[in-house]
Image (cartoon, rainbow, N blue to C red; front, side, top):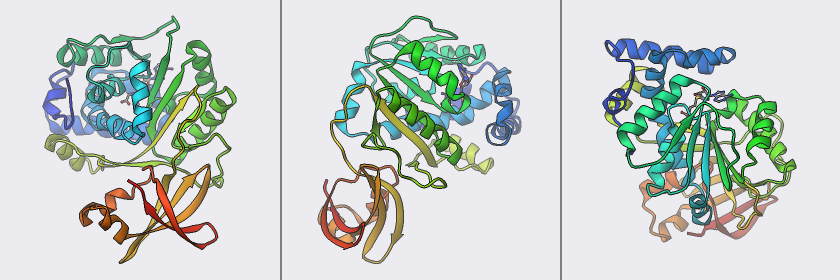
Length: 341
Ligand SMILES: C[S@@+](CC[C@H](N)C(=O)[O-])C[C@H]1O[C@@H](n2cnc3c(N)ncnc32)[C@H](O)[C@@H]1O
């Protein structure tokens, strides 16, 4: 099975297009980058040739794969445990990124895995990866899937932002999933889309399980937005490619949401935004029950828990759970608190 960090050669060995040299690969990735970031109305032009699929594999698959683990590991263990009960349908699977990333966390997963994509080339690329690295795992990669599946988790990774809300609503009606996961780019545009999807899902009796811990309306101001932050590690060969292209794929903002038809069980505050670090403390905004409050956390509290000084910063990341004990109220909606581990 593939596992992080993935090497570029491993991926290019299952590609149907062989680049003549690094320069040709870099040029093709930059063209894709331009379509994804500046020419989104031409998005369907991104999956037409084997050369494009090979460039997608080398740059996007390699750097999106570790995001799946990083995101799912943000969930508390009780929520992660739910995943082994689902059959999974990955919509807009591309080369199978979500499913292969999922198997990296759940290597013994025994329920159905289905990857769906309208691009025949993407589906055949996903099958090549499966045949080489996942010979003992059953995964169906298909361009269409008509039958309903029981106890279904539908996943969207970098595919929701290629769908209109109307198409999404038709998908929901067709598959009636018990749960949905979204791992999408951490941009303001995607946040606006997920906000719309969130409202729609709440109206259809879904509960939001992450990152909001309640179903009340999102209180963020019109021009504000919420995302999670991942720090990823890539192999030297992938890191070299991203550096040559001057694209940072290690510090990665994402929008990660998880919904189910079940009730919220545990509510826990989430770090919404990291503010200042002073000599003695960190300050951050924390979202709980859809209200944002400010917290000051003294470094001595972290030290007392045996956390190394070098790891303090990584504790304060947007999107991390923040269970805490309030020490005192400094002013309205501003608290000194101590993390509970
Ligand atoms: C940016 S890629 C993401 C691929 C993969 N999920 C990942 O995270 O790397 C978006 C994928 O969605 C697929 N897609 C877009 N619209 C679709 C639709 N209406 N039905 C099925 N697949 C679709 C595209 O063909 C493409 O492979």
